[in-house]
Image (cartoon, rainbow, N blue to C red; front, side, top):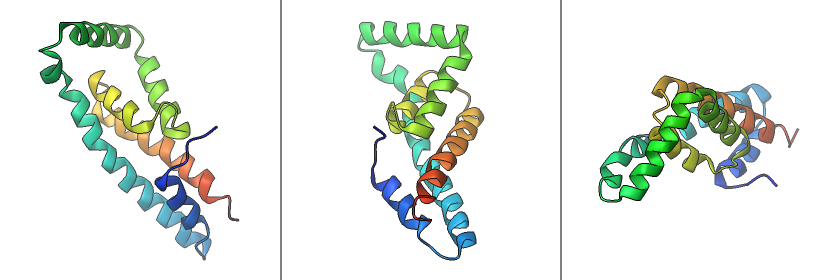
Length: 128
């Protein structure tokens, strides 16, 4: 089961736009706007240390997660990529986790743009 939300409904509607070149342009713009909206979630994740100062248990959990990410950096990027394409785990949660794990911002943007473009292009191709 692939989660469907308002973004997917918009991509589906964009797929019905004619001519197809206009639909492709709209999907590209929509993808950039969608990922731009996730930057706030990423930033929120980077601020996790401020929240966890009061919870030693949560702080230890985040430190362990960061250690795993440092040891296996491909793991975090892989989870982010899967989330960007399949929305499992939910993409906004993966964006927060990317900030917590301190995935470099440029890499975050690149993976998110590529994954979301694939997702939205596939959904937009359904009407045709």
